[in-house]
Length: 178
Image (cartoon, rainbow, N blue to C red):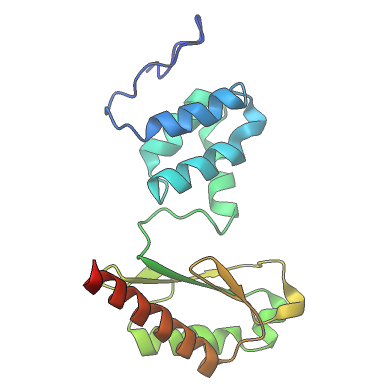
């Protein structure tokens, strides 16, 4: 299946007609369809679609000429990539060694219990997702939580639950006002 035409450096429209593929195509064009651009292209796809589908991974793999196994390997290695839609609000808890030692597992359990969401899952209403990461690289701030993109360090179960509650309340207020 030919996804793009290389002969005149023209990109064909994606067969699905989904306009979001144009953002991915622009990223690939900027990086001249080099295999080394895989991480940047995956990041662009994640930002554009919100998550990575199998169809999207195949498209990127074929467009860059990278084996699917490598594309999938990179996508599964980094915590920022997800294969399922996330909620409107997201909490990532680092479970690396330093964070684990300082109570990350208890934080995950407290959040899961308080907000009725499984680790790696999203609430049925799609408002909140709880995920974990192997390491966020901020060991000096352990335990580290990323709440809607904002890094929060040296958290406790109580402060983290309180912060998540505040974020969800603010999100609810915004939704009601809009």
